Length: 201
Image (cartoon, rainbow, N blue to C red; front, side, top):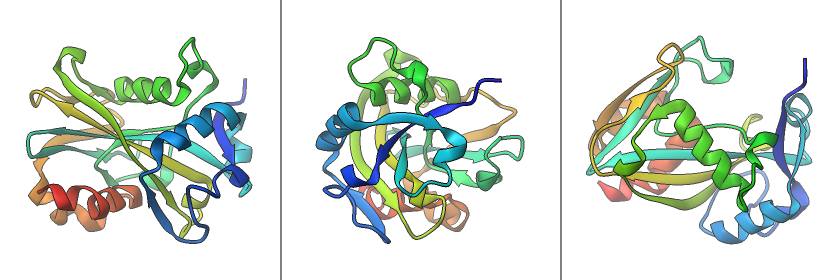
């Protein structure tokens, strides 16, 4: 069976964007996307999970309508055991080789694929898709080998449902209700709330 390869970027290209050994939220998103486009590469995922010379590039997309956000709960049937039964304010995942597919921005292509794989939204219902910031969290082993590109998808209506219902549940909640789920949120979702959504209530 062919081994999955994921998009990574070497740590030496990240010096202008993140500081090591801490939580980073950077707004220098467009320069980073240009760097990824020029300097990233694909390596086997099994290698990437244990190689601190690289970070795996992860589009991380939160979906909103009015003052509500779409909250998901990852079931134990998902392959990523570290996220089982965790709540998330965003969807997303790794970028693979087939995301190159004839588009100038490989990250954008991967982001759109992940969005359509994990949830069902009508493209005509999307008001805006915007790149918001970078997330890098070196305070835990998982974060040390991943860097997130946070995207915001704003919808005209609340028409959003989970695609793979055997993998996760989803529901709309008010932004003001997020604190009730905070302790059960995955780390990156906590960071999104602390640095972005808390100010939008």
